[in-house]
Amino acid sequence: MKDPNVLVIDTRNSYEIDIGSFESAVDPRTRHFSEFPEYLERLAGEYDWSQRDQEQQGEDKKQVQNDGNGDGSNETSSNEQPTKKKAPPTAIAMFCTGGIRCEKATSYALQSNLFPQNLPIYHLEGGILSYLDDVAKREKQEEEEGSSSTFHGECFVFDKRVALTEGLEPSNKYISCHGCRGPMDRRLLEE
Image (tube, rainbow, N blue to C red):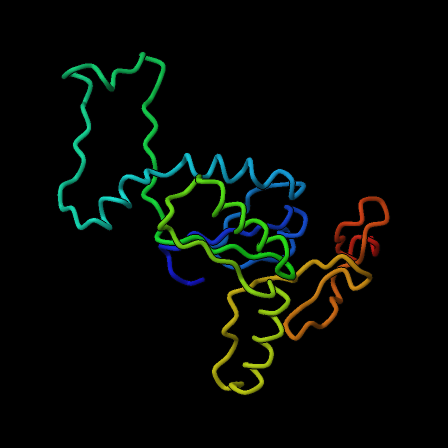
């Protein structure tokens, strides 16, 4: 999750991500998981996948684009700017709370043909909950080294605990909103 060339995607909904996520993770800004396939379609269109293919084939030549003065194939109207696509990631890693949504998202991404077939697409086995449990166990063994976790905040769960911290400890910060069932900072009730 620390490799800057790997695109890390949080497959959870925005209200879950708002209280905690991994550093450098992309928030797809979905309100419902059913919106995630549409997000992946938009995401796939943001990258120039031909760059990745050229790099993998070991081609040293860079694709030269027409500046609009030659055959006119890249001409745009005065109001339109050509959209420059991003360099593609070397892999995609997805995660969610317990592993189910990210497994579904990974399966969809692999079967959708939105991404090159040779692009590695992974998911965090057991989700954030497994990660937070594992980090707590490792930190007990390596207390002198400090926190190695790249997850910041708390992990929303769909039960009376509302959110969990490292070691799967229930949150002292969040309670469930009676209106929307999302997380609510308990300090709001003190005002």
